[in-house]
Image (cartoon, helix red, strand yellow):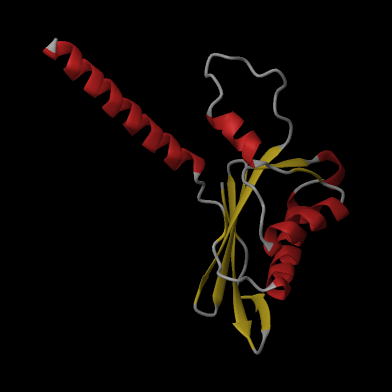
Length: 161
């Protein structure tokens, strides 16, 4: 009888531990981490990011699949810019992200995912904004500085593959 109680308590403990770990997987480290982001600054940075993507990828032949839900001015401006330039953009929904996380590992995909995975991080430290773009295995990073109510690139793009 005591052995069954220990087994039941172990099962409950393991279940709680798994749920906590899965909760950590659902929250993603992507997106805009700036409190009350300026739509003007976001648009300028998104325009610059779009120009860099246009230099690297052929528009009519490239699809980007966002890996996270977009809910900020930078992300909306980026999606709009990419579509205007001729890129296909597949936006992520909370439901699609959960389906990817909780999909059975032995279950084959009904349709292989087309396109390149795309995610971004926008952050700020003082008057310096940082944009980090992740496209497939490539990382692009650029800093932007705020001076006299305008934002400008503070250096060149850094590319890591």
